[in-house]
Length: 167
Image 1 (cartoon, one colour):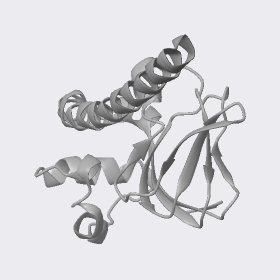
Image 2 (cartoon, rainbow, N blue to C red):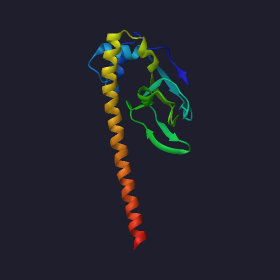
Image 3 (tube, rainbow, N blue to C red):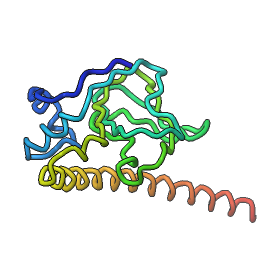
Image 4 (cartoon, rainbow, N blue to C red):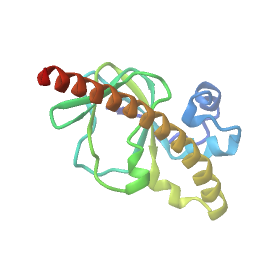
């Protein structure tokens, strides 16, 4: 992995990545705060980004490339859309990683150090949390809808298999 220093005072990145959903705030101050405790991380194909069972404070936003998310030996999903987030559960439950994320192509992520949020002054922290958790809720809602659709398809396949077995 190749990693930049923290991205404080990198306003040009706001213009470059501000269009992405999880970064899509009209509040420039919010984006400046977010960048101040974020780093750019580059991963080569095959590199592990997060490891199931380990704990860290990083939330990732995919900027380019592709990652595979797996639990045990089973691949659960692939992410290849710039702006998609992963690792966000750490902000909600502060528990160890529930899955392994591996780069399946050369990949660049914005890595957000969630432990640094507590360093903000109270007013900035409250504003940041309000905006970030709203955007995070939208991201999780999108993921939940996709999982619900996959569950529906699996249930229909099981029902079809059961009905064929009953005849």
